[in-house]
Length: 213
Image (cartoon, rainbow, N blue to C red; front, side, top):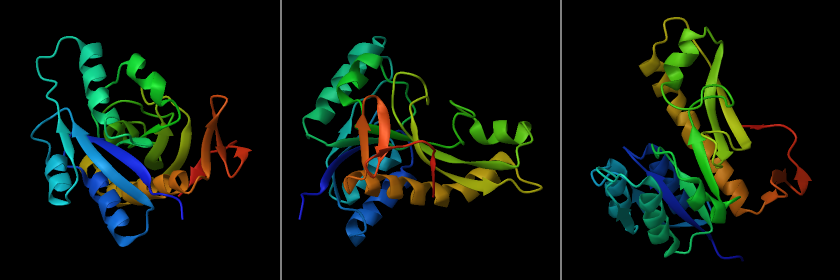
């Protein structure tokens, strides 16, 4: 049996997607080992969840750090010390410097609360409502220097209902995010996803359409 995929998770807030990964690892559903959880906010609730689960943490406060590139380099150096195979951005609210991403090409993913390429950045739920969209959702994509612009592996869709506001939409989407992220990490851990020639492959063939979860 191959060794579990070594995973580092980056969070900035409550860490609900992190909790989903921890629960799936503990249940045996995910063949992974979460080796470290890191945050740019020392008070992030996600760090406490990691500590409660016995997972190593790295807290590197970004407040007042004017040199963005130097901060990112230090953060990623600390993460690299844990030799992860995959980095998962799970509610990590920070745009990363392109220089730190280079060595991790094809080994870093992000979950984003929109149906990319729609609505990169913030306030995605309200933007979907304001646009009158019938569908909303979440996407897992590989991270590149372009904000929320790397190739999308998979998405999960929900219908926007009459009377929805941004909070209601976010709450209804969140459980789908958990399933989506765990499924994508599972595919990667099982070796079904590969980054070759700057594009995604799934089950040995180039991925020509976004997978649905």
